[in-house]
Length: 360
Image (tube, one colour):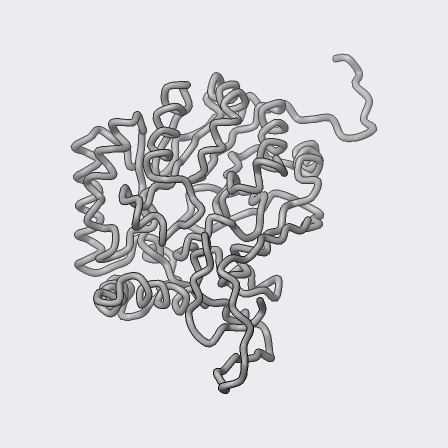
């Protein structure tokens, strides 16, 4: 599916309602109803999986809005299908659509563990915590078979390298053995993303992600296993899930979370139109009100790319949101620090291929 359809199409288990052409494509086709016979449109669409060759695995970041300098994204694209995902526009770099393509054409980092070990073995490598899953979810359904995230964690656990993980997937519990080992030296942070406690809202916002109850269970099990666990209430969408802030904070505190953070909805590039389609389909009576509140918190625009305001917004509504979240966290004893510092002195640099040990 390469062109945008004549109108919104709800595929089973998918979040996007169309497949707009990527912004870098110079030519595009548009389907129109001309009265001729059309084949019946399928209700589902299969996922395609391809390896993505890479020469390196660690990405560097210097944004003041993001509390880490190094990250790894095992996958490009995500089957969870979250309609609000700010990573959707990145599929345009593959000449694919941020719509249905983002959810159904998934790339995985081939040979990820070997590449990571190779980079960690370089003499020039400076140890800094690595965040896994900042772009797309490292525990999306394909991880069950591909085990790319698991292979990366095995390298980090063996070399005692500090790591943070961000996910809304329950499969993270599969790797409790590695996380517990890292936690013994204080080398791991985990953040679980929770957007809503309403199963019906979750079904349309995040069609293939775990249920709210399942994510709270993950928080409880991680905390009970001694894994420092926080929750990202993200994204907060005005007039859609912002009324749940206090309930979500109370629920994650009861589950054993140590800290919490939030991000205001961001709508870069093609995501603006995709999200507006979702509003028109699922909450049409509130669609314009939601967009009006977003613009009010984004200096009159639908997206604010500026450092310092793109994650939290600006203006009275954004300030009220900040105050509500801070008060709820204070009431339940949750830290709002962006990250817990992780030590680097446990790191054991792996030997480069072919390097002989002197036994010293």
